[in-house]
Amino acid sequence: MQRYFLEPSHFYSDYVMITGEEQKHIRRVMRMETGDTIVCCALDGKCYTCELSEFTDEHVKAVIVEEETVTKELPIEVSIAHGLPKGDKLELVLQKGTELGAFHFLPFEAERSIVKWDEKKAKKKIERWNKITKEAAEQSHRQKMPKVHSVDRFQNLVYTFKNYTYVLVAYEEAAKSDEKSRFFSVLNNMKAGDNLLLLIGPEGGFSDREIQTMQEHGAITCGFGPRILRSETAPLYGLAAISYHFELLG
Image (cartoon, rainbow, N blue to C red):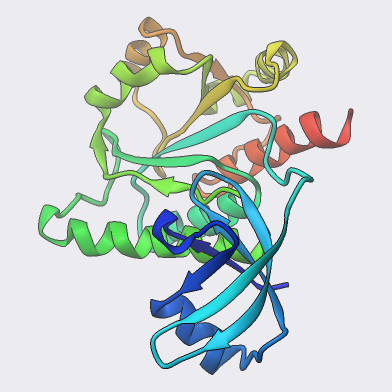
């Protein structure tokens, strides 16, 4: 069933009024008709099965039938902080990371980031990134749409560590030394409702200075198995492992 994330202003007591790009998608792409059903999700995470009841040139009206009761979200909130990589690698992380359950994405400028953030293009870039997560959330039947935050400096990011239950850093040297216990230990100690920040470096990884700074602010370095993963692979591995731990083992 097709899913749409909509602003709170679209929701009324017993119906939803759909306009803009979503209205065009329903009419022109999906070619739906009166009586067809869709799922409409509010930004607070509540989703409703709705039946299309009215079409005009400006809107599509859908009557609310019932609210979804089965949760589709990870039991812990996982935010991915990723050092800016080259090319469209971050877009891959945003799309697949959304499918795997990420809650927020926080791109940042790391010491070894080859790409330099262009503030002149920032607004368009952030809009594009959030469109990618929105479409991925709809496709994967998420109930919450991940937000992509503006690119920040590494120095500012570390001061947000205190806002998380745990902060994990995927560290190449930990993988090389066959470190296996920290990632599992953190997941084992977490409970529903906790939040986790997972930090991934750019192609060149983190510098020694960055690792030391993160550790001083309470971050835990860990390995993701004995193999060295690309920067765009590491967050997806982490999210898949978290999903397995919390959603399949139980």
